[in-house]
Image (cartoon, rainbow, N blue to C red; front, side, top):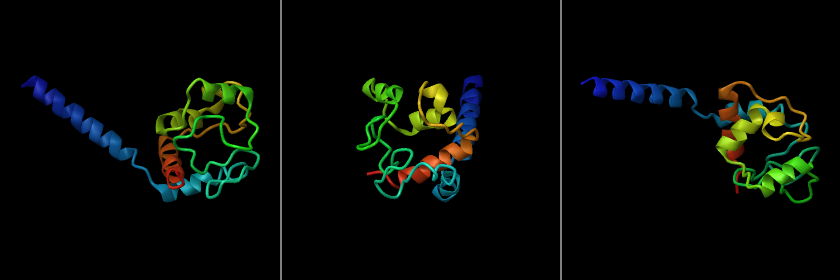
Length: 126
């Protein structure tokens, strides 16, 4: 009986946690405003940073026509691909995830902002 009660408690905790991390692309667009000075997402154009159009599933450091830092190209060569988990880690603290990256952004600290900006980026995946 205790095992069933424990299992039910764990299931409820997982459900509550996953609902609190619901992704909202419209809210993510507002978070992305912090990124617009350097990145474009709605077209395949590089600015100070690479285009983020189609970033989900892309190998790190590989967008054509952008000059990446050596650490970023090395990350891609070692197999880093931009998926939800990798983007979450990177966007939380870019310099900790890929030491030597030239991205100057300090990171997003709120889990909700991270989930929402990734939902926004997903809309522009190829």
